[in-house]
Image (cartoon, rainbow, N blue to C red; front, top):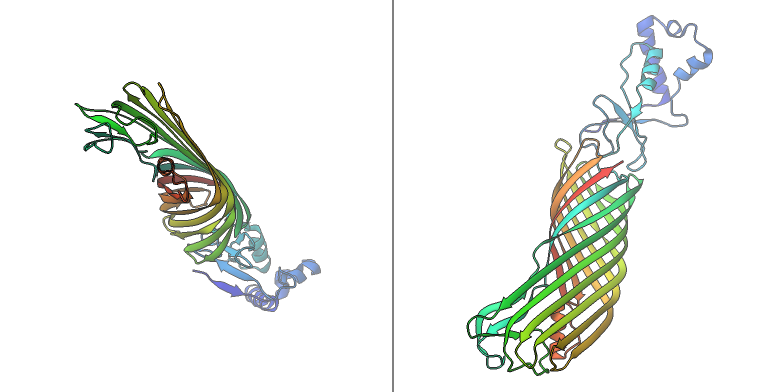
Length: 411
């Protein structure tokens, strides 16, 4: 609840005169012996030149009030530049005592729950990479893929959820705006091996078909696939809309991103090929614009809040890739080098639940996030393009999704 009282200097003087007269039988008895300057100041408004003063009673969820203790009052001028002062309402019987009590009871008033604050944060990420599963070998009845019948088992490198982190800091410029800097990193890896069963053989899904490996039996194969990304974000964040229990902020800034993917695979053939290996490397570095919205709905009674975030980035940068196939005892070498400079959009979303303590200095939150890198070059997409000799328009979406937990400490 918010209560506002407007008091002009004349009304204050009249009210105080009546109060002192009723108590002491006249104004002179209340001010007898006091210097004329002090007596004159008691009949003037403390805010010189102001037509009135707004007094807002702090209570749970007040949009313009912070954390004043019960029974105290806070004065303010607007949403983002209010006087952070709380004072005890007047409860004295004398004119001079009332003034002394009002001035001596002044204390600091905490910022509103939605206010931007300077602080640091650390975030734990547990993400799974999508579009990263890769079939590197299939078991069949014949070493020639054209005549082979699949028998079921397949060699697949599929990344499970892996840990990452995000850390950074916030510098508040006012209650409604701040500068946010964050660094994010995630690393994932998957290793797998397969052996042919019975009289069956393995057919590689990575070797270039032009080399003379067909008709040669393969009984064992393995592969290791690695992926990592890192981002640096610098954003300006500003309060857009708010109510007593909800706040919406917009963000705009710059982002640097790096995404790396490597694949190492070996497949054992009988003579004359021996051990055939395939190695690929994909690297992206981009820089561009980012922006979005975040929303919080807060319960002052419990300290709990629900939140949601939506971000979009448009990065321009180079996608570079290389493919190398070598055979132990001959059979030829296949190689490809690829480079393409184009824009890569990134869309991100997150929802979750959090809690903040009464002072707002400590925040804990946990949720689910998903990010999609579009027009990206994935390992499996690049290998398929090399094997088919179709290198135009090989982009696809790579996703990262999973759980996130954050601790924020404000000052």
